[in-house]
Length: 338
Image (cartoon, rainbow, N blue to C red; front, side, top):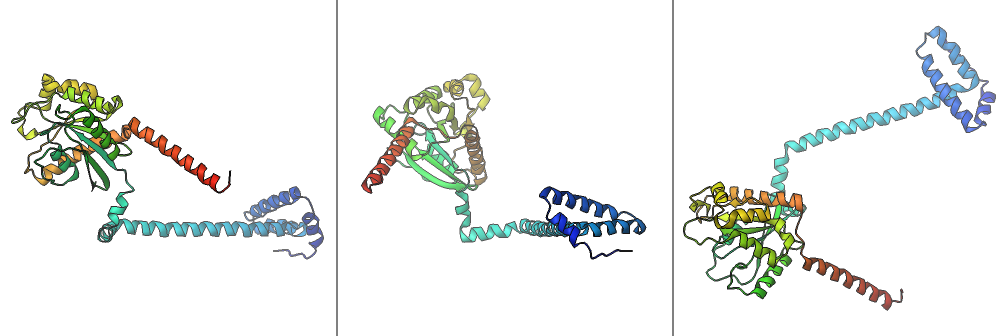
């Protein structure tokens, strides 16, 4: 039995004109009383409904009920949209191969690769040590060996596994045939070409004991690099030993015997050498394996140490910032804004 009374205007007007605290208290009390009455038998429920009606609380709990219903509707709508999103997300993952084909046909793959971190490397080593072969391995290309002697640093780029790889090849900075001013100039040029700085410097040398070549002192080579670049670059040097296909000994044997100062070089830079097969007609699979190993070492070094920054680059940044401030001051003065 439900009681419906029409003489609630006076009472309702009383709490409507009351303070905010009274309205809030009546709202909470009325809603809780209404929810409690729903759990009671009908015989006990109607006196509570009658009390709410004559005091005006029925208006309050009706209003609160509509708000609760609206919030529940919004919650249901959000759950519905969430199910739709999960469905389309699962559908897109199943057709990822189609997206890759579209990106390849439209050329979007190369544009997306620029958002990934790039790798910058400088190759240093004696003539005939295999720098060109290592550069070809890193870039996945087969640039022919030039008959003449390289006179200045060169830069080559490519995209490998979504990351841009920049390789800077230098002249023979270890040879006494090149003067000290030329060596320093080319060392600084390689730093500029690898801006904002190299992630690694690969010391490329023929593996000690490999047939058909002269062994170079690896420890002395590391010291020369430190003199030409900076002492801090020692933390970015990775020894790379080429002509591994002509090697009769294992890397552990070379380190134990300290052949050509190899163990001393490792103690200076703190990096284990990487053996690379540089024979001209190696298989594509072998070249990819060497590329993955070398780039993996560089990526690991970049993850832990970032990139090397030379004092020249720091001074260039300071000069560029000063020039920008001077030009800004001149423009403001010209327009009378200062």
